[in-house]
Length: 496
Image (tube, one colour):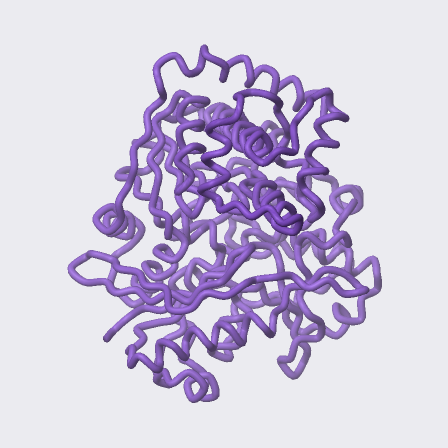
C-alpha cells in the first residue's frame, strides 16, 4: 500500500493521516488521533512538545505495522510558535504556547521600538501579541538565557520535520507568520531583529512548500517500521496554508470573486492574491499578508473562531453538563435570535468562558444568558457578524466584489453557522472539505514528488474527492434581523 502520511497538529488535537491518490481521487484515513493539551508551569504556558513527538511516532508506527509504503511525510501546525536549538541541535527550552501571558503588552513595546508603519511596510503582517517578533522581543527584554544559547530558531512544523529528518529549514508559509519575513522579497527582514538586539543568524534557510528535505532518520525508521528511504517533505507547514491550498475554488480570486474561511478553533478569513497589500488602509484594518502555496499571498484576518464555544463546552463539562457540538448547535438553533452581540476577538486567553463572556457583555451594555443554547447562539451569530465585517473590508482593500464564501475545515460541519453566514453576508456559502488541512498537506507533498502539477490541480483533485454543500441566503433573512444586528455589532466595535 502506497500512501502519503500527513501529521496535522491543531490547537485541540493532533492526527496522523494516510492518503492515497489514485486516478486523481484523494482518499484520507485517520491512523492515530491524540490530544494537544498545553502545560502550565510556574514560568508560563508551554506546548507539550515531547509528548507530541511521541504521539507522531506512534501514528507513524501504525502505518509501519500496516505495511504502508510511505511516499512522503509532512507536518503542518499552527503559526508563530517556535523552538530554539543549541549548538548540539537540542532544544534549549520547551516551546511556549502563543496564549502565554508573557506576550501581553508586547505589541505596544515592540511597535514603540520600531513603529507599526516600519514593521508593516516590511512584513505586511497584522499586529497580534503572539507574533514571533513579539515573542522574541519578550525573550530579549527578559535577557533570556535560552535566546542567548540559541543557534537556530525552528518553527513548530519545521521542528518536527527536523526530528523526522535531521534537516533544519524554514518552510515559507510558516516563516511568513513570524512578522520578520518580507512577502514581497521572499527573504527575512533581519533589520527588524537587529534593531531589537535579536541575532538574525539564528534563522534557517527558507524553502518553498513542497520541498523534499531528506529522508527519515535511521532511529525514526527503526522506531516506526517505515523505510529509511521515506521522503520527508516541507509541506505547507502553516495549517492555514495547507487548508487554503485545498479550497475547492475553480478559478483564481481575480476571476472568480471568492474568499475563504478556514474554520476551527480560529477562523482565518481572506483572499488569495499574487502580491501583498501593505497600504495605510490595510494597516489600519490590521490585515495580514501571509504566504501560500506557489508563493501566493494570503491576505487575511485572524478571527477568534470556535474557541469561545469550545471553552464554554469545556467549562460546562467540568460542571457536569456534557453536550456534543451537534447538541449545542441544536440548542442554539432553538434559542431566541439576536439576544446579544459580542466581539469574538475579545476572548484570547483561557478561563471560565461562560462567565467571561457574560461579564464582558455586561460591561459593554449587552446581556447574555449563560444557558448553553443561548450562549452558543450569541457566539455563532457574533461570528457571522464578524465575518460580514471582514468580507466588506476585503472587498474594499482589493476593490473586487466577493460572491462566494468557501468555508473549509472542521467548522464547515456546523450547518447552523454556515446558514448564518449565508444569511448575514447575503453571499453563497460553499462548505467543505472538512479535512482541508490534511488534504492540502498531502497534496502539497504530492506536488513536491511530481505527482501533482501545482495549485490548480490540487484544487481540481479536492473538487473530485470530497462532498461539498452549497448554502444560499434565505429570502428576507437580512431584513429579518441580520442588518439590525450588524449595525449593533459595528457600534459595539467602535465603542471597544
